[in-house]
Length: 209
Image 1: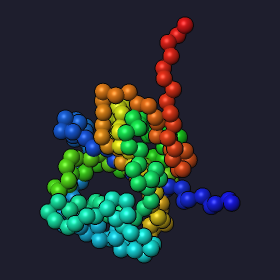
Image 2: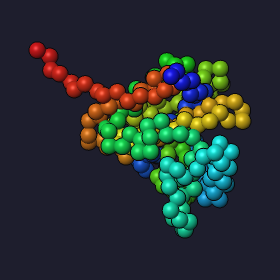
Image 3: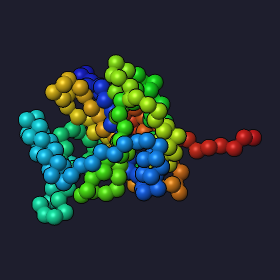
């Protein structure tokens, strides 16, 4: 049976946690902050739950909500679908440093970038917004050297979310990169694959004869 392809993304959000040292470097390079209060996070959660219900989905099907208490994390609510399943790319030694170039080659441009600071959920997270080239590029010089340095590592948890078409007609895919491990060589590479997303095994380096 031939299935219709899922909607291709108009926007890709790339999110990476940063430590205090990298946060200072990115801030000094001009990357602005965006703060999110706990009340705002709860508001976003309610919107996601309502959106999921309208689609006949359980917003907590992937990241289960066990109970509501002082440790409740609003970000546990989801409206999209996890491309790589409930566990994502866990403990797969993933490389994502080539992803930015892939997005550029696919016609995306950087249309936003900020450091997201959540009072209820550290650490700070770098959020990069890539949109199709018809969008207006981000004004000003962006510190790509810092971004390359941040991505030039191994991630032991990568999750890709494909979201439904929003009210403005855009489809947003989100890439969350976590569990940074600078001491381990990557074994796989996250591949944009024309919006279908794929994971490719990296061949071991061979010595010249």
